[in-house]
Figure 1 (cartoon, helix red, strand yellow):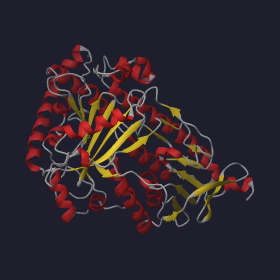
Figure 2: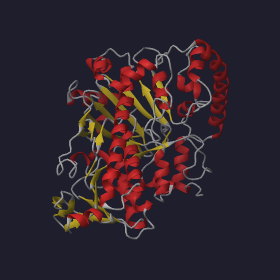
Figure 3: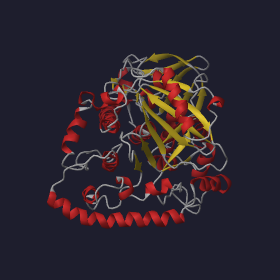
Figure 4: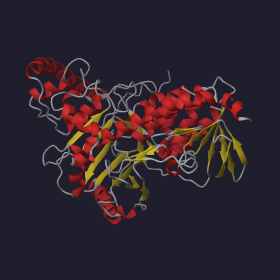
Length: 522
């Protein structure tokens, strides 16, 4: 095909390179969105030699709509993926003081958040109660191990806003089966060993060892950190975030429950450690526990000892009987140009940072949805779509870096150079420094976060700022008025917590019910 004809050629053959959660979720969203267009073909090339790590992984509430969009049943998903409900994140030891060194980032908006300045009311009340516990019922549900819905609540509906904890390896397998059986996605098990190009530099086909050449019009690189197409073929590098976010290593291990009736946590538990933090994610049959740390501040042996010490302190566990933790190395950063020519990277091929606020899968969701909804009709259209896509994701990655860094810069911990370095303004982003100066006298609002699809809305910044005991100096007169209005919302939040604790089942009870009977379908 000549270059002129190629420019006007229709985009029909979509080839995803790599499976796992990113590859199969992207394929599912593409296939489901264009299910009524028989001209669109979605193919996934998955290497049989690349295995995924089955650690516990967290999502954002957006995953509920994504699963609904691709036609997945919530009960089927929960059963197949060892999944449980996630109502937010709990941060232990991040503030760095002896008393009350824990706070929550729940998924439900603060009660009255859009109506008045709740922070003024919290400060006026003395700020003795942790912010999230004052403004939201959800931390109280998590503390009582209550589920976010009842057995009679339909699939994907919620009493309290929720996401999921899941087994990442099982999730990829579940999505693969759904894509092939229900969405018409072609699955090729093959190893890509060469890239064939058009005269203009576009990718023409992928040469596989087992199946020969696989042609396509648009190639989606979901090959993980290898970035087989975008980096190895096109040479598109990453923006290095290591000066801002230090963590570049992780250890992960599966931990059994001591008894079948052990309560399942409804929140990700992130516990600060001397050189990083541990995650603890409760799945239905086990926990996924790991340690994210900075290799410049901590040796692998030190990290291993810290992880085992954390597991031993978290409950009755025979740490000697655990399998050897999986070791994961990563370079924190992102592609400023994830879409280059006829190739777009999604997932780790696009970028990766420590999984502190479950940003990995939500960025996959956003990337897949935007690609599916804005799928270019022709190669000529592709450059316009790519430019907008790249601008959007450059913005999103910068906001992810800002938000994750916020957890560190407010800490008062003094037990290591790791934490002291994180507080050094020179290691922060310019945007975050500007925001913190502004937020000494204002609270975060939609004016600070201007995009329609922010990864983290302003309420999330509230939960972290005031959970970490940030005390702004608000203008006296407006604050006094807001304080009276806020008190009513605090009473409503407390009453909601009381009623919901009494009405909702335990987390484990609901998961057991779903596994045995399922949830009602609308």
